[in-house]
Length: 165
Image (cartoon, rainbow, N blue to C red; front, top):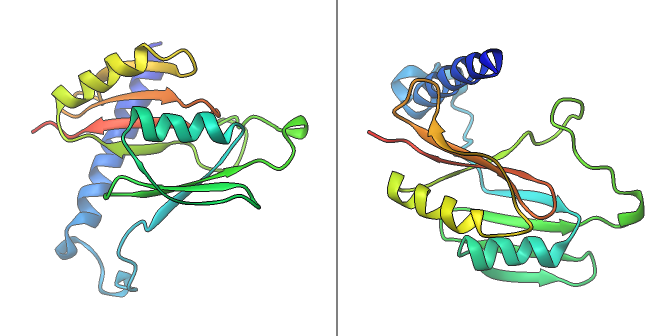
């Protein structure tokens, strides 16, 4: 447990340092200006399209932008980020993602506007029977940033984070 907390503290420091370095143009190298502005959207493969869609729409407040019934897929947005959900083709051959053994998205981190909103979200998520809460809101490293981690209905890990000032 102590090793886990130490790892989280070191990782948090690296993430915060990296984020602040890249957020300020004066800290970047000239040759790093390649025109990339940020994340346009995130595409997640899901095992249960309806359950994952319901989670993002009913619990997190995303709006449905469109759907592709042939894939099938659902396109969602909350006006800050667009997320596409793609149903696995063959659920019988589904291989659950293991963040320590597979290459792929380790987790999706979504910004939350305040500590109050993070705590409210935690309470709502704790009432859901198809969501696993990995940990409740806590300090990231030594703080003041707070975060929590969950697994949504299809098994994708989502971190909710607020950078408390």
